[in-house]
Image 1: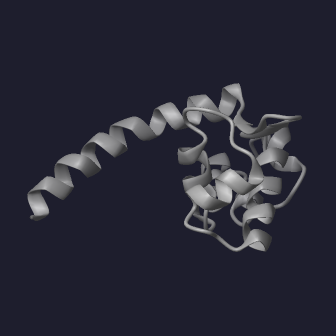
Image 2 (image 1 turned 180 degrees about the vertical axis):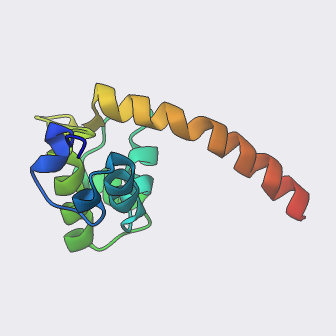
Length: 112
């Protein structure tokens, strides 16, 4: 069975028992607000309050749970006096979203 990344060993997620890191990552990213948090942190650090506002006033409880999970898995970090920001790994993950974002923009134009 393939070894899991150290970040995924800290907290079990659905799909991680399969030994397939992609399943664990997709589970994490499929949780409510996870992708939105990564998206909102793409340009600059945000405080918890600013991030909540950027996430359409998401429930503080759910938002804090996602922030904790994303920190535990090494995708974001908390910088004192600055707020949350993407780590190097988080920025790499964000870069993988860009082709999907461009596709979504083209797809949306075709829907109208």
